[in-house]
Image (cartoon, rainbow, N blue to C red; front, side):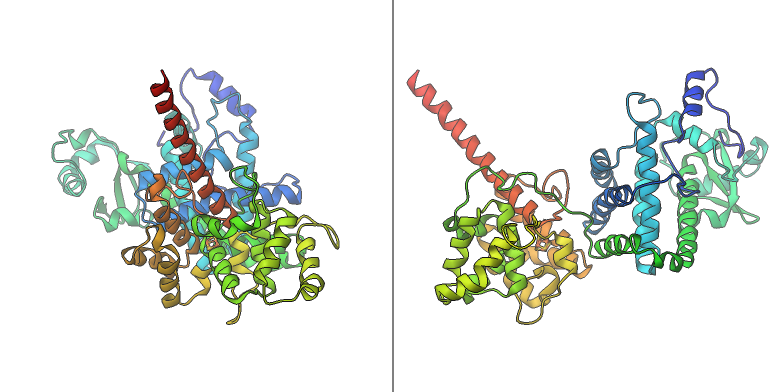
Length: 499
Ligand code: SF4
């Protein structure tokens, strides 16, 4: 396994060998040495990257939230299951090659998007490293061994007599991490020699014995060499890609996609949540219900727009657009939307409203002009596009409010839902790191604690907020589940009384 050029697999495991020879991608793990050479459509190009970005963004959010490694790992695996499944070669019923191809393409598209600044490169390498580690840790042990055998890691097995010769030094190095109760004699362990520069983390923690520029790495620390190699390769590749990138600038189809991907990653948000159910709980929405709903279920961007609308009886163009599309996806019919805006713009006479606003409302519902079905704006779009001026109310408060105003607004809007001054430092810390959606997710958790939402759970399974309608829909689902549970409980009580 550890001889650098061995390519053998388990003795007698011929079916595995045969299967590997059939697969175009024989290993689940990938160092991404070569770019994909197949023809792909522009949609495939974008989808593969977006799905990978969803996983990487959740990994980044986990870093910002200081999640322990095991929690990060389970969230990343859950995200991978949904967006980037990567089954073991033994899962013969799965489209293994197609999954690995998607993984391969997605990685290379994101390299193009994230090679363009030092900040993007650093964050991309960190998230990709974590993803590789999650997969490495969760890989089938035999398949991982085959993958390691397929590469030249340039590690030299230390002969037994050399291990015996340096036994005292190896014991001294091992004492920094070895459990004192572990009585396994060190001279029975396997060691590998690599240049010390290849395992800086182990050297820094004094976990290896150094001799003549070589680090003696015990077998249990072998993964450090692999991870370091992955990181070094990726850093070099990103720099080379950055140099080659100007040639791509002429491709007008690809550059906007790359811009969008990198912009989203910088804003801390990867993806667009898509509204599969418009209202969140199946009820018909009416204009009169909006005020109450906003207090219980709206994220801060929409809550702020609603409060500004109540205060000023008016919203400027981008505010109307952001809020109107949100309400449409929430489930407000066109008739109710016109009623809502008519009532809200109470200082404007009927003829002015009909002339200047009714058309735009109908337009956003696809009933005028080019009759397009406009989607509600995602967090990424709200964070990155149409930056608000001082007189505007649209945008994301976590990004666009000053720190003082944000804290005051948080307390005034959400204290009735359980948010206290003691919660502010954690929220503001995410804001300071430009992870606005992490701050929003934390506020969701705090304000939905009475529904049983715990810290770190996000909108379910640790997932972060990526869309205002996702926030509202999940919040309404929680309320509906609680009401249904109470109804069931009451029905049970009535049945008992009647029987
Ligand atoms: S993070 Fe998204 S949902 Fe939350 S306030 Fe900002 S834009 Fe709205």
